[in-house]
Amino acid sequence: MAQILIISDGKAGHRNQSLGLAEALQRRRKQVEIREMAPLPGRRALKTLLTGRAAQLGAKPGLVIGAGHSTHLTLLALKRVWRVPAVLMMKPTLPIGWFDLCLIPEHDQPPTRDNVVVTRGALNRMRPGDKVAGSGMMLIGGPSKSNDWDETGLIEQLRSIIGQAPDIDWRLTTSRRTPPSTLELLKTLRGVEVVPVEETTQGWLPAQLAGTEQCWVSEDSVSMVYEALSAGCAVGTLAVPWTQRGRLYRGLMSLAEQGVIIRYQSGQPVDLVPPVAVFDEASRCAELILNRGWL
Image (cartoon, rainbow, N blue to C red; front, top):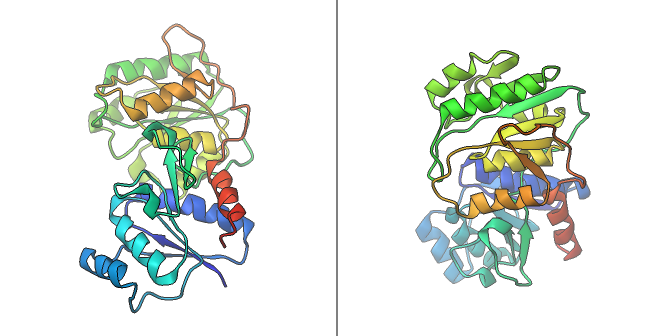
């Protein structure tokens, strides 16, 4: 039975990207198994890459996938040992030409090359489900290296949205970056069920988004914007004070200019509409891989 081997650095976001692609491939090749392993220790990875030999690596897969800088050497080493394609889900720090395929978000400004696929955001595992009429989600992040945090402004935005859509069954969750003081203020909101991230279980958010019609996401949580889009939600973003208008900011502005998302603006209607086209980058990339004859 064919295998997809994911090199996982243990970071949830990177694993989410790799599994998003692997599961999209598995939906098209039912007989394929998905296996995960940690990156080889640095010296072992380098020795394996240089010699092309290694023991105790398990069964040979049909494809190796990884995300995160610590996976680079292991991907290249296993590519050489097994002579299988290596797919990297980011812009590498090593030469792009060393990998068989790089899936790079457009906000990272990837070069035009035969082994580069430009994606709209990072891939993820989200899938749309049967939408519940009148359902809405609010996803709240927190301060980051790219943005400050304005609790008062955030609460004002949320109250305005809830006030304009009182018939929506709103549910809100936070992230690991949400300050405790913000959570306390969120709990004062009327007309919304607040579920702190600490009280959610694995798989809770994908299940929620799958059945949710519309979703508001604080702009700092770019990955959650793409997850909500992938789940088929109509998506709006809540303004945050940006300190660095870099690649993540440019990516969001591009989505807004294309009409894929709506940015909150005081005094403007907050009606959201679903994307015109299905937003499923994982499936698109899976098809491109299979069209290359891999797996």
